[in-house]
Image 1 (spheres, helix red, strand yellow):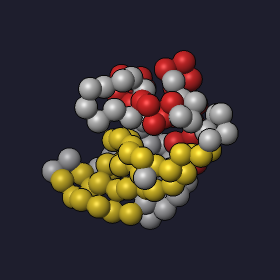
Image 2: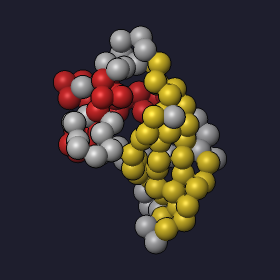
Image 3: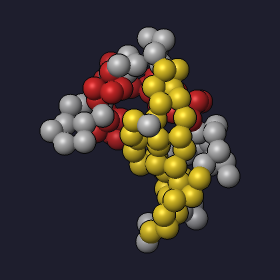
Image 4: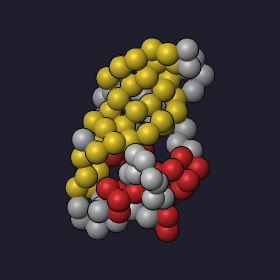
Amino acid sequence: MYLNPNAIISPNKLTQYLLIPLPKDDKSQYLAQGGYTLDNWQQLERDLREQILTREAQPTLKTKYGQKYQIIGSLNCPNGVILNIKTIWIVTEKTTRFVTLFPA
């Protein structure tokens, strides 16, 4: 199944979670290896849409908030590095929303 290409990718999810150092479950260092920083968070959003969201999604878990899906793929990053990631998305009757990503 392919997810809605107009999925919601919250800027706050990128700028206040994924791209800032956190004491637990930090993903910013992994993303920084590919050249993603707060200064170019829009590039990460674009790359998620163009390189990941265009791949087939696999259903994982159904919750009271909707059906979760994962998409595993590679990001061709701004600095030429390739990062392997697993992304999580949630789909309801009305919306498709990006949840998070992990190194794969």
